[in-house]
Image (cartoon, rainbow, N blue to C red; front, side, top):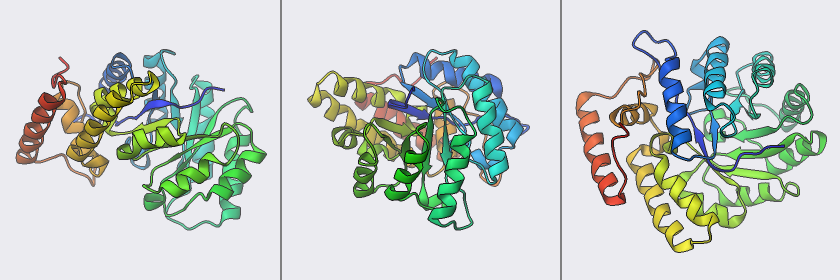
Length: 303
């Protein structure tokens, strides 16, 4: 089964001025990321504003990315939703359109017991073919539910297509415990500042929203790492941190979208209640990013 690895990009969802998904912009973004050499794509996740999208919109986003990527790299669709029914519907759709796998976040807002979470994930994993890869997705600070390593192990023992987890909380101890869930259990982290260190610990890669805007430092770091050039990897890891700081580590997706547009790739607008950046915020962001690109030797404009 295919797995996520290296620089896996959590993709934004561009909206046009009429608050519709901008499929043309999404396709252009997909092409840019493929051209820049990222390893995998992960649309419809937190960075993609998943819970602000209807099921039909999520299907449209998934299909656009899969069709544009055209098997040039793995595409895993995040399918976790507010209800199990919608999650199963989106998982089925991901299989039908030829995605390479899915990610599934915990149920959100309402607290769930470990037994309930186990049943939820097993139900989702069993709803797709047993050779179709599934990643658990744990972001407890947003979802209000947590996947303990022991819970991940229970799910994996029952569902061999549950091949890994994406963990988006800066907690090294839990990350290391995930690595011990099973032989070859795939662990990716969503905290860019730990990318290099967690590769050394045994993680397969990062799932990065910042890399959706500036893939270059992440791709350069990972390529140097797998080539055994640790000094160069350390150099680029410093820029992974700097770009993450400049982009506020995804705390506001409007920053990602504005920065993409500045680079010549239509990032689109935000969906309410979030607002686009103010003109003065855009100006300050551009000044900071242009200066950082000069320091890193990265071309700011992609056009």
